[in-house]
Image (cartoon, each protein chain N blue to C red):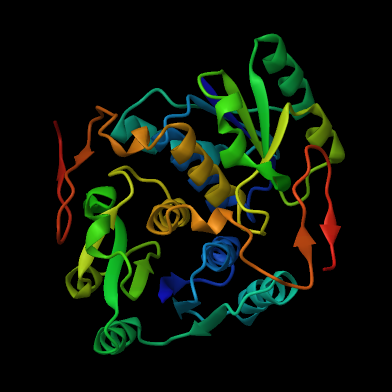
Length: 171
Length: 171
């Protein structure tokens, strides 16, 4: 089970970013995205619509208290992995978390010190400023050994990759 | 040489997304990001400031006519790779473009058909709706064989990865 916790969402500023985090999480085989900050039903509905069209059982839920969620998930035997540019190289530590239930925590403009302390691991995808979204994508890609590149979904719509142009079928 | 062309930037809506595309491009060892759409000096300056602090020679330039840039780059012997959810699996085709000079084209809310036709390759990172940013990150990660995870920069600031908390030094 892979779940994502996206911290401190702000409806206008982060609308596209959080939507893309949701879409990437879904396509990279996560089961659920939680998000804190300000509730944003429009963003939820953008992600939901894609999941409805392209398939899968991806869920998205707003959560008021993200530290409480972390505690709850730990009780459910999840390993808490916080992605941050200040953490240890994720690639060297991947073996520690393979095949576990994981809650992946990503910021948020500013991440409070509690999240560094409450996480089981603070991992970085490069120690450079990049983006919570690129960090998440590369992390999931490696965690899954590229399994997300296979044809994993059966939805109402399916894209058939083309050399030029677009082909979408209704299977 | 790896360069990025980000299409159709809109200052408010895409501000964070394009900034993160710039930061990811830099950290994933691209040399330059071009962008079209509306000029946005604030976004340019956010990316530039990071490059100035954390090192490297990453450049960013606004371009009015992206198709003209593609033609120019082709004359300079670049291979044009458009990332799109409608394209062929990138992983199966990576050998065709390794060690070439590459211009990577990414959308933009809506990408005009010309870009599909003018590109040498249309490649997908999953045939699912994800994000131009996650597609770019995973594509560069594979293209570089993970080389971006090494310590590639010498800047004014350097992050030393920690198990907890943050450590930034001035080398």
